Image (cartoon, rainbow, N blue to C red; front, side, top):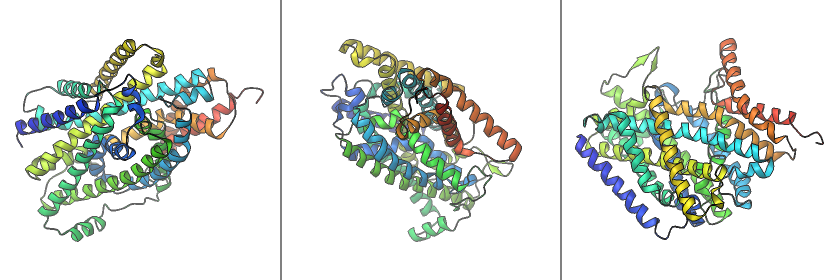
Length: 484
């Protein structure tokens, strides 16, 4: 595919996003950016959230990681589904009953102002790194596919993407994103389906033979019972539950979309529907991963191996789609990765802006003009921060998705501990001590995981979030008020 054709595809796609933004932002109120006026159809929200969760990481990393990790990621997905049930019946009622815009307002109600600010700050750190790493992967692919040929440096590619995202989200924020994410989800799933069809045709397989080829392949291993491995079933399943609760239920990015639904019941339907569709989508991407390796084996494509493991697995899907599968599959891939790059960052920037302006600048009490100025300055500030993080990690290798979940275990662990402690106990604590606990516990978790690996060859994997949250809860017991 020529760079010119790819550029035309991206420009056309962006034009459609701007058109959606234009129609959706008509009659937008001051609060549309933050709440979507609470009029979003739950079916649209549920489908659009798939694109935000999948992002460029799932789109590229999950198919590639199959070569080293088989189908073990599915254990994590099973845990996710259980976590979404908890979100539906425990967290959603709390958020709606308190009429929250920033979900971290719950922490102020339950514990106090310092806990509230600490929880919000941990989200801001987590989301900034997560959004940057997700965009980094997509930007690298677009750089490889089109911008290298135009002699555009990587840093400028990232700036261009951030400017485009700002253009269609700036006016009405979450109200626009609910609808643009729906389009982006469609193109993400379409790209996976088209790629599977292209491989199936190249290998002369029928539909039933394709299914058999996947399920009989050596990579089709779903359960790992090795206690010491990071991919052990119990570690993956339990961490899947906790990370779903933390990265969706305690994440302003995901919950802000849900809170645009008209009522609590519609929000609950949204989460349940979203969880089932997401599980099917992730299984689809794992199946695509097996097909990619089948194609490489069949046509003798040499993949990079180091110490018996595939390296740079995030490059596999882009390389084959753009160089081997034909024009239609290449176009669908470009649309998919473009959708991934936009959907993973537009909602993150909106959520970061919402959290900071509500939690630290008290924007709800500002006048209309001042509210708009603050929103614009904060949105610009977080765009710059994401750019800086991307440039710092621009030389990183390996599958990004594992990095994101490991980082999430350290940054979301204190948040998870605070919410579980707040929901399931009535104990009052000394609010001023919470920031110190939330800073120290991730450091202690990291050290303990390092010791267990070095001394006992026992890797916590994604289970670091359980240890982190557990230590936070235990520490909160020590700062309970004396009359408790």
